[in-house]
Every structure is written in structure tokens, then in C-alpha cells.
Length: 299
Length: 307
Image (cartoon, rainbow over all chains, first blue to last red; front, side):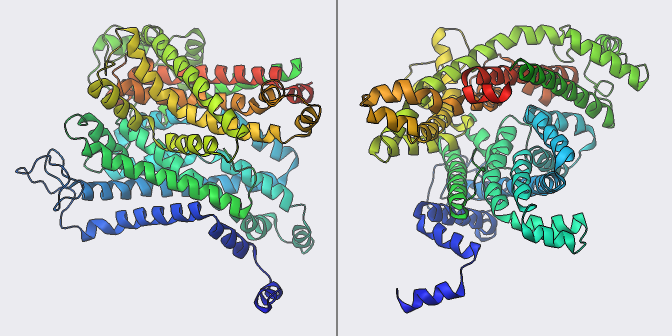
């Protein structure tokens, strides 16, 4: 054993350091993570750097294929596709992250409460989750859009409803995972110590138990983001998600699919970016799961 | 076991009641009654719906009427399709969607399962890596990308199939494949994982030690246990196929229930949306119940746990 490694041993190694080390070994997962971050940064920063804007039309140009001036080509109104794809990516990623955040908040609070209280309360709370699992939620998201339409006026309000609705239906698996974790954690000595010190249940749940479930929560969130983005894209594709003038990858793919015979690039570029993002997020999530050694987060 | 099945059945009834009730109160809680605010609907249709739903009565009475209607499959009249009841529309278009969904499921099982099994048997070889990478790509290519791509290549470039409508038997091929390939990819992954786990168990080693030939082990010993995960995925897969039908029926212009549902949602045809949504929920709850029963029948471990 070399002196350096024995030093490292003495310093001890945290869960996160171990996990980071294991993640580094998984080349594919790291590559996927890098590609995804690259796409995300491109979408966020890109529109500011581009000489074109999303709504800027050039009717002389109309739909032309990729060129030096327009890397991804232009659409029927002569709008630069690259900028539109980046702007659409902003919305798709924003919906993905925001809805996932909503689902994490609900799922963690619910699962931790059930797991900590245990007994009959736990049984009842988890039975509710079982019941909810049997309900096809996308239908409810669509219903919500339809019945709330009279009171939604701006595109932003519609977007808010969209990600609140998606988030409100994606928390079930998260609740199950967190509950399982908390169930184990609440039988450990440190919880008992906290309890014997007279801490309130709320304090124990939020200050002691939830921070310890962070690993699985992060892993499962990484896998929730692509699921949410897919839902958003399906909704946008059938015309019940993001609406013009805003655009999202789902919406761009929809427009591209309509014009695919004559202007294939309108479909190809958004589809590639969308599929690549989902692919990378799924692989990175799988890698993180292996790195953090989380069980039960699979499918 | 009987008790378990009974409790599952009662639970399904509970889910149905929750769903139907949630739909009712969701509509009632939003300002602007969707039945009243519809401008484009004709007077006759509005009157009919008022009569069917008892909209002039107090809320709880309305709820009672609504529950009774739901039990009887009475769902009011469409706003847009003049003079047609929601029930009529569902009865007419659902068989198409169901046939499409079952075809897709069959394609998924027939393509996905063998690929997953072979990949598991030859783990870490090329016949594992190549199909599994393709499967991962398949999962990330949503139906609304796959559909147009298949339509371009096999419909327009090669001219083998029509790209829209349902007049010949060959018109079913592209939509069913579009929907099926996504699940084929999923099934392949599940079959591989399940088979890998089963193949590493003791009874397989015993069989090997006794000199049972490899193919016999796979087919007669491992397959049954290894494919059980597929069964539990059938429930979610059904739900996914419903959603897939929204997309695929739109891409290929198929007059199924999914098309009606999305059209109705876009047109704010409230009676049709609500009726169809309740119908979808009912179908999925029943499908989930069937999958559960099947699982208990085929999985001895669950059978013992249940009895």
C-alpha cells in the first residue's frame, strides 16, 4: 500500500466521495452527464449569443436547409431553427425541472411522513398511493387543462398549470422510495437518540431523516426529469401542452413532423436534441443509481 | 387466494369511484361551468345535457344523478358532433383503438421478449450489447418521432404502405409497429433483467449440474420465472398504450377513441371529454385488475402470499 492511499484511508471517505469515485469509473454515464449539461447550457445561453431571435422572420429565405448562416436551417417563415430549438429547449427543460421539483416536494414529504409514523397511518397512506397508481394520470392532466381553460389567459399561466399538474402526478414512486428509506432509518440509533432528546416528530423528519434520503431522491429525480419531458412533449404534440408563440421541443417536433416530406431538417434537429437529452438523462440516472448504490429505484 | 382477489376487486371498485368522483368535482370546482359556457353548442344539445346531468338541481343531487348515469354508461351528448351521444361515439371508435393497442402489444411481446432472453443468455457478448443499445435508443425515441420516421421511410420513400387512414389490412402495420417498437424495447430490457436474475439462481445451477442441456434450462426452467417482470409491467404498458394511441392515431389519421378524446379536448367538447376520460379510467382499472389476477395465477410465490 502506498503512503498516499493509506493517508486517504485515515482521512476516511464520505458516501459522496465514494459515489463520485464510482461514477467516474462509469465512463458512459459521465459522458452522458457532460453531453446533457452541454445541451442545457447551450439552450440557456445560446439564444443570447445568436444573431437571430426566435420570432425574427425572413420571408425571402423561407424554408432552406442547413447553411453557414443558419446551422440548423430555417422554417417556412424563414425563422432560424437553431434559435428556435434552443428556446424550445429552455421551455422543455424548465417544465422538466419545475415539475420534477414539485413531485420531489410532494413525494418526499408524503413518503417521509408515512415511513416515520409507521403502523396504521403508514398502511393507510401507502394504500392511497396504491389506489392512485391505478389511475391514468395523463388523462387528468388533459382534463385539468380543459376545465381550467376559461380562467387561464396568458401562455405562462397555462405553462404553470402544465408543470404543476405533471408534478402533482409524478410523485407516487418518489413517495414509495422515500418511505422505504425512512422506514429503515427511523429504526436506527441516531433517530432513537433524537427522540430520547425530546425532538419533535417534525424536526426529526425534516432535520434528520430527509437529509439521509438524499441519495435515492437525487437518483430518482434524474429519472423523473426525462419522464416529465416526455409527457410535456406528448401533450404539446397533440396540442394540449405548450402553445405558440412559446415553443418547446414537443411543439417543434410536431411542426417538423407536419412538414417532414418537404423540409426534413425541421423534424430531424429537434428530434435529435430531444432524444439525445432523454438518452443522456436516463443513462446518467442509471449511472448515479449504481454509484450511490440505490436499490428499488429501478423502473 | 380468493380473499386476495376479492380485496383487489373491491379496491378496483374504490379506484373507479374515486376517479369518477374526482372528475365530477374537478369540473364543478372550476369557475365557468363547461356545460354552460359552451357557446358553439346548439340549444338542443345544451337542453339534452341539462336533462341528462340534472344541472338545475342542487350539487349533491347532481352528484347522485351523475353516479347513476356513470353506472348506466349514460354520458350525455357531444357538443360538436351534432345529435350524437357520447356513448355512441365511444362504442363506434373504441374497437379500432383496442385492436390497434392489442396488435402493438403483440408486436412488443413477439419482438421484445426473444431479444431480451437471448441477450441475457449471451450476456456481455455482441448479441447482448447491440440489441440492448438499440433498445435504449428505442426507449428514447418517442412515438411521435418514430411514427413520422417510419411513415417517411416505409410509406413515402419505399411506398410499401399508406401513410394515413385505415382502409386495407396493411394500413395497420405502420401504426401498430410505431406503438409496438417502444414497448418492444422496454420488454427486451425487462426480459433481460428478469432472465439474468433467474439464471443466477440455485435451481438453475442444480439443473446444469445434472446435465440438462443449455437450451432446455432456458426454455423449461428459467423462462417462467424470468418473464414474470414482464407481466407486472403489462398494467403500466396498457396505460402507456392509451397515451400512445393519442399520438399514433393523430400521426396516421386513424379514427379511434384517442383521436376523439384529443379532438374533444382541443374543441372543449366537455361532455365528450368527461365521458371518454371516465371510460378510459374504467378500462385501465379493469386491465390492471386482470393483470393482477394473471400474476397471482402464474406466480407461485404470490399465490402463497395471497392465501
